Length: 370
Image 1 (tube, one colour):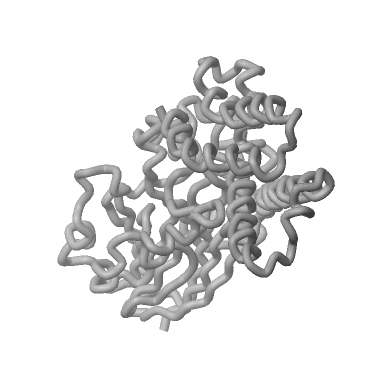
Image 2: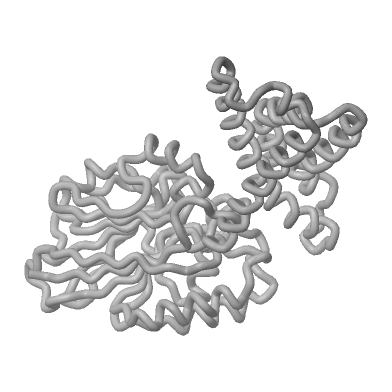
């Protein structure tokens, strides 16, 4: 159903793309060949999931990989053709590029090649960006209250989206990176697993996760994809050594409190005031919430910091502008009243293996209590 939705969503821009390329760049004699190639590539995106049902089917895997790159490729070809049409509009009266030149074979060939090369380079850059793990480092000061600590280093990730196609080598790289940062506390913001069967090397992956052993433990919350894929029972998290906080709080000695909320997908999640309660100890409070919503409400509570994910910062340009309009904070850091909010663009991604906005991100925060 999702791929059908994608097909219907692509239908209007795809039709525009086909008609404009066919009219602007394809010379007579090649139009039928262009039509066949365009339709095969365009329809490969939804068809890669329609005809094959076995996750282990090699043909389906090949189609899946190809269609994963084709989706952003078509997006950036579409944007490039759209910009070219705007250029033609601006060029209408001054005729900087005369019609006679635009009708020549060489002009059409190099113009269309340039558009395809541009889109391909953007996709390649997005693949590199997705696989290049980066650390976003922040330092903030929060009230010490009655904590016995003066400082706390927290590492946070969300949106790992582990599925059968995620290389174990990437998980190994992630674990090495986190351990090199020497966090005191490790937090997970949901959407960590995203496959009904998770991964053929599940035991190895959960073993790698357990190699992260910070002083004050490892905690996490569920994301919407754990609910979609049937992992909201928490089995993966238990195997990976991650303590789930489902509308609950946990006190770490006399040092600080970690609270976690159900994702908004879970319709019965508790209000934040009910989670914190009336008799919560006078300690710094760190909150986990998969989606960066209700910032105003959270900022009016005793919560000192909230960590979220989910948005991917749109993952593909220009969808980051949509995310920016949907959320008060779609990516990055913001202080609101006395609460510090952190939103990650995700360690990996969902859907196409291309990330042209944001980064594959580990958030590292050095808290100073005073």
